[in-house]
Figure 1 (cartoon, rainbow, N blue to C red):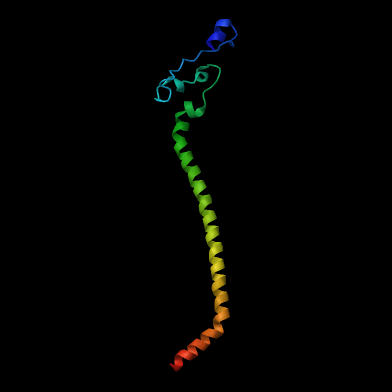
Figure 2: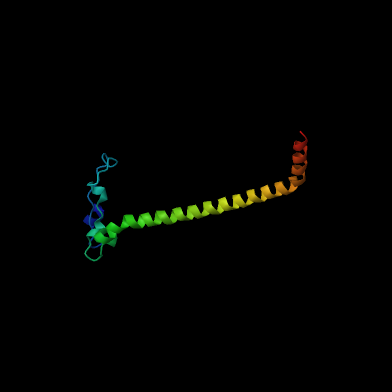
Length: 115
């Protein structure tokens, strides 16, 4: 970019970012130059509300919590549906078993009485 600026080929209003020290690049700190976004310094553009409006910034955790609650509600609804399906199948199996063995139970009860 510096070379383009010297040659006069850089776009008008272009700013050269501060060179990054590659030796310390991966030892990031919140105050390092890598986090500087030069596009935010333009007077022509308005900063996003999540950056400029304290009310929006304060509301972000609540919005994230609402999203988590909605996701958990979806998971619980799916779990409820699976459990209800399982329970219906178990009740059906028990009823079928009882109807198949109804005659056998009378025989067993009659046999126990003799002992």
